[in-house]
Length: 151
Image 1 (cartoon, one colour):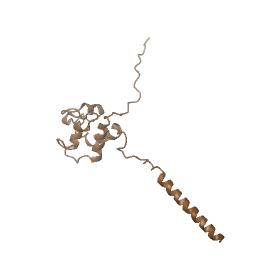
Image 2 (image 1 turned 90 degrees about the horizontal axis):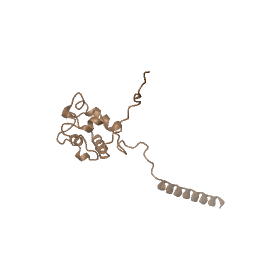
Image 3 (image 1 turned 30 degrees about the horizontal axis):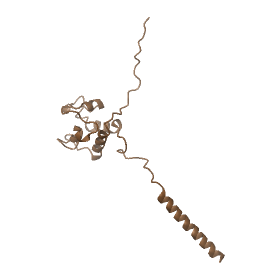
Image 4 (image 1 turned 45 degrees about the vertical axis):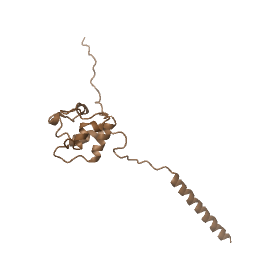
């Protein structure tokens, strides 16, 4: 009889533990992904957009080869735009020429090459929608502008 009571007690204890553990697992908040997708959060011009432009657009749109009068070698040059106007309108991807060309309206870019992956186009659109911020690092250490006295 004593052995039977101990068996019931242990079975009950295990059952309560399982129910408690199940509640804990359900109630625990989901873990955050330690490696968010590249498109999550703020898009970086320097780290995300610039590499796309350098790889896909630079062969035709540089200071040496000015197709459409557009230069993508720097944020400032891209902001200036080309023969058809500004490359982008901050906060308005739908009104940005670069987005239209990437979607093939009026013509598909990059010209003569495969189109950019949809993820890269979406990243450019997101960057423009976020205000097309220039986060290019500033050059380190400017030369001193102090006047030197020659007495």
